[in-house]
Length: 362
Image (cartoon, rainbow, N blue to C red):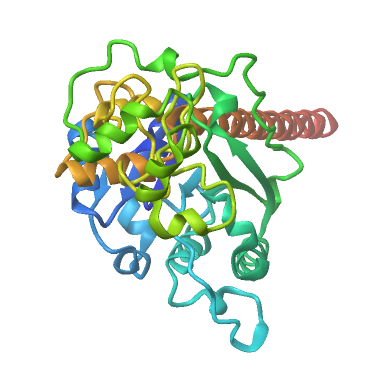
């Protein structure tokens, strides 16, 4: 049994890989960034990768373009970057989202009416613009005829050696809610740490710290940060940040082999959110970040080193995507099974009625 999916804002393929692992057949992926699109094409030549602005694609006849009728698509997936909405007339509907990238995701949903959709984003979306953005998004999903289920997942619970939270909304089309239920994936019993994923990592390019910064990180123990070095040295490095409140635990932060990574970022060296390698005074390499995100070693990233870091940092961890997609797949199987038995029941009923008529006329 094969279920078809279309993915929007596909990036470097973290979500698509998870869907593939769960058994989905991808019939289209839309991604505007040329390097990310090339990553998808080079790793999966058979995938229908569309490198274009989603605004151009959402405006065309999607049924003809993807050769699928409205209502037949099994899954629409993706995560649109979400800007603040307009609240035009406070309708809290699709028109309020016009001009945003999410609007085009909603247009795809409206035009194709897939059986299920998966929408992922950062956890902060829930409170974005005092919760108004999230409210409009959920209202639009429900107005398009879907029952939505919202959950925040930590990738560390699902085999990823990283503390990374993602908001995932799964919507089931209203005519299928009696047959299909989405079950939250069961958390793994073991939570991996960096030691589990940083063994025998393939060689790759990586950013480097300046000589001065390397000397500073030589003073920081694994699992430590700025508080673990002499105060006068930390104060000189932190400058104005020294006088700010809060823990500022991201400054001069060094990872430990015995803990998961903090969220992999789009840039390997940001002063407020540093992630130094546990045993060497340097950032993680491209391939190390890919391992931490749970990408397979054979998945190659295109473009400059900066682009590769961004693609990896923006991705959904494939193993997290797989766990969610697996449960969606199971739900669709139940729908197919229910439809089959319903069709068979109708056939048997019609056959029985025909036999009764033959008997009566005979």
